[in-house]
Length: 116
Image 1 (tube, rainbow, N blue to C red):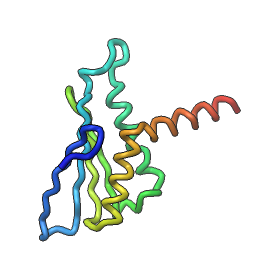
Image 2 (tube, rainbow, N blue to C red):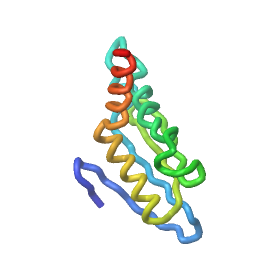
Image 3 (cartoon, rainbow, N blue to C red):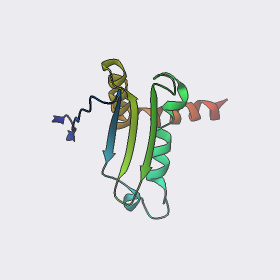
Image 4 (cartoon, helix red, strand yellow):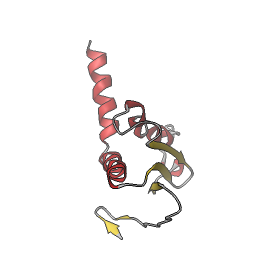
Protein backbone atom coordinates (compact mmCIF):
# COMPACT_ATOMS: atom_id res chain seq x y z
CA UNK A 1 0.00 0.00 0.00
CA UNK A 2 1.15 3.56 -0.54
CA UNK A 3 0.50 6.71 1.49
CA UNK A 4 1.28 10.28 0.42
CA UNK A 5 4.84 11.62 0.09
CA UNK A 6 6.04 8.33 -1.45
CA UNK A 7 5.49 6.49 1.84
CA UNK A 8 4.93 2.78 1.46
CA UNK A 9 3.64 0.48 4.13
CA UNK A 10 3.13 -3.21 4.56
CA UNK A 11 0.73 -4.74 7.05
CA UNK A 12 1.44 -8.24 8.29
CA UNK A 13 -1.03 -9.80 10.67
CA UNK A 14 -0.22 -12.38 13.32
CA UNK A 15 -3.34 -13.27 15.27
CA UNK A 16 -1.26 -15.04 17.92
CA UNK A 17 0.02 -11.67 19.16
CA UNK A 18 -1.75 -8.75 20.78
CA UNK A 19 0.97 -6.31 19.74
CA UNK A 20 1.68 -4.35 16.61
CA UNK A 21 5.05 -3.18 15.37
CA UNK A 22 5.25 -0.25 13.01
CA UNK A 23 8.52 0.95 11.47
CA UNK A 24 9.36 4.17 9.69
CA UNK A 25 12.49 3.96 7.55
CA UNK A 26 13.85 7.24 6.23
CA UNK A 27 16.40 6.87 3.47
CA UNK A 28 18.91 9.21 5.08
CA UNK A 29 21.68 8.05 7.37
CA UNK A 30 25.17 9.04 8.41
CA UNK A 31 26.33 9.00 4.76
CA UNK A 32 24.14 12.08 4.25
CA UNK A 33 25.72 14.07 7.08
CA UNK A 34 27.49 17.24 5.97
CA UNK A 35 31.28 17.27 6.45
CA UNK A 36 32.07 18.81 9.80
CA UNK A 37 28.58 18.03 11.10
CA UNK A 38 28.86 14.28 11.46
CA UNK A 39 26.23 12.73 13.68
CA UNK A 40 23.39 15.00 12.53
CA UNK A 41 21.16 12.13 11.34
CA UNK A 42 21.65 10.32 14.65
CA UNK A 43 20.94 13.50 16.64
CA UNK A 44 17.72 14.08 14.70
CA UNK A 45 16.69 10.50 15.42
CA UNK A 46 17.04 11.18 19.16
CA UNK A 47 15.17 14.50 18.93
CA UNK A 48 12.30 12.79 17.11
CA UNK A 49 12.08 10.20 19.87
CA UNK A 50 11.67 12.84 22.61
CA UNK A 51 7.89 12.59 22.24
CA UNK A 52 8.13 9.34 24.18
CA UNK A 53 9.24 11.30 27.24
CA UNK A 54 6.12 13.50 27.15
CA UNK A 55 3.73 10.67 28.01
CA UNK A 56 1.08 12.17 25.70
CA UNK A 57 0.91 9.09 23.52
CA UNK A 58 0.32 6.53 26.24
CA UNK A 59 2.17 4.80 29.02
CA UNK A 60 5.38 2.88 28.56
CA UNK A 61 3.23 -0.26 28.53
CA UNK A 62 1.14 1.01 25.61
CA UNK A 63 3.90 2.33 23.37
CA UNK A 64 7.61 1.69 23.14
CA UNK A 65 9.64 3.61 20.58
CA UNK A 66 13.25 3.06 19.62
CA UNK A 67 15.37 3.99 16.65
CA UNK A 68 18.70 3.51 14.98
CA UNK A 69 20.73 5.26 12.33
CA UNK A 70 23.05 3.39 10.00
CA UNK A 71 25.06 4.52 7.01
CA UNK A 72 22.08 4.80 4.63
CA UNK A 73 18.91 4.90 6.76
CA UNK A 74 17.31 6.14 9.95
CA UNK A 75 14.72 3.72 11.27
CA UNK A 76 12.12 4.28 13.97
CA UNK A 77 10.50 1.21 15.57
CA UNK A 78 7.18 1.49 17.39
CA UNK A 79 5.77 -1.39 19.44
CA UNK A 80 2.20 -0.83 20.57
CA UNK A 81 -1.07 -2.50 21.46
CA UNK A 82 -2.76 -3.93 18.37
CA UNK A 83 -5.93 -1.86 18.29
CA UNK A 84 -7.12 1.06 16.20
CA UNK A 85 -6.55 3.85 18.76
CA UNK A 86 -2.96 2.84 19.54
CA UNK A 87 -2.05 2.33 15.89
CA UNK A 88 -3.62 5.71 15.05
CA UNK A 89 -1.36 7.32 17.70
CA UNK A 90 1.69 5.78 16.06
CA UNK A 91 0.69 7.16 12.67
CA UNK A 92 0.15 10.56 14.31
CA UNK A 93 3.72 10.39 15.65
CA UNK A 94 5.05 9.31 12.24
CA UNK A 95 3.28 12.25 10.56
CA UNK A 96 4.84 14.61 13.10
CA UNK A 97 8.30 13.15 12.49
CA UNK A 98 7.89 13.58 8.75
CA UNK A 99 6.64 17.16 9.20
CA UNK A 100 9.55 18.02 11.53
CA UNK A 101 7.15 18.86 14.35
CA UNK A 102 9.33 17.52 17.19
CA UNK A 103 12.41 19.30 15.85
CA UNK A 104 10.50 22.59 15.55
CA UNK A 105 9.12 22.19 19.09
CA UNK A 106 12.64 21.80 20.43
CA UNK A 107 13.90 24.79 18.44
CA UNK A 108 11.08 27.08 19.55
CA UNK A 109 11.39 25.93 23.16
CA UNK A 110 15.16 26.55 23.06
CA UNK A 111 14.69 30.00 21.47
CA UNK A 112 12.15 30.97 24.15
CA UNK A 113 14.48 29.76 26.92
CA UNK A 114 17.40 31.73 25.41
CA UNK A 115 15.35 34.95 25.39
CA UNK A 116 14.58 34.70 29.13
